[in-house]
Amino acid sequence: MTFKEALGQLNIFAQCKKYGLPVWQCPQFLFLVMGVAIGITAIITYLLGTRYVEDPSLVALIVLLLSILLLTLSFTIIRSLERIAEANRMKSEFISIVSHQLRSPLSNLKWSIEILSSGRLGKIGGKQAEYLRILTDNTERMGELVSDLLTVSRIEQGRLPLQKSSFSLAKLTEEIIEKYKPYASASNVEISFQAEESLPRVIADLSQIKSVIENLLDNAIRYIKGRGEIEIKINKKDHKLLFEIKDTGVGIPREDQKRIFQKFFRSMNVMRHQTQGSGLGLYIAKSIVEKSGGKIWFKSKEGEGTTFWFTLPIK
Image (spheres, rainbow, N blue to C red):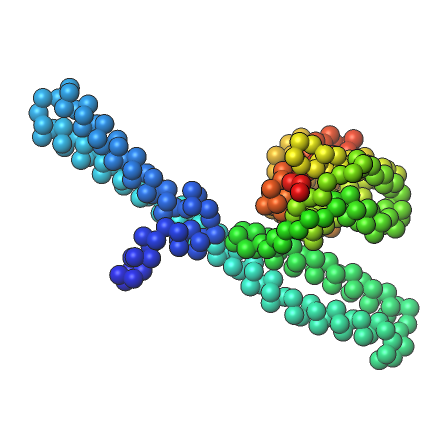
């Protein structure tokens, strides 16, 4: 290790930025805290030793051995945490690079399918049209997955851009419901919406909150088996707006509920009813809501349905 690299290791803020971690979770900061704790422990041990042990050299030896032991343990633990942080950073970079590299070929593939489907290069027969439709559907699914992976990568690296503005959450929700009505109707699902009168505007990133609501509504429709209902409500609670979406879907098993906001997690009963999905939507939704200054939570019972809530700060 060069002198410059050694100095870089001492720059706690630079190391935390490198790993994409807050300062209080950074291995270098934790090592500093443990060093201070070891120093305090050594002083307390020395004071107690001088009180109960007559030989000063024995006291000094006990303090020295204890300090060496604690420093060795601290160094071993911090090095392990540093390796985990580095592996996590490399994973995030890998996801980011792969996602970016996939976007161009996917765009080209989508453009080529559109050209072929248009019939400008020749007449498209029945079977050909069916295969092109399958290609189109799978290309869109791949595009959504790549987009989700890029968002996750930005969240993990602390680079998710939020352009906050003032907007009507009720109006945004109405527009999203209107967009999803054909999908809901085809799935035999009825959507009802209620909002308090004269609700204040929220402060958040409109496009990001739109993706949160779309994800929750899409999940609610997707996981209703047969005919069902979805109720959406918006109310003012303290200094925030409370968004609620309740469905009559398959619900989430109790043993899976603690993992529902984890990356790539999908409960087994959900996978039986709907095999498609990356398991990233709720993780992204939670990250966006919390970064916007709100909170998200849920209540669910298997076979009876699920209710999600989230709050957003108001103007």
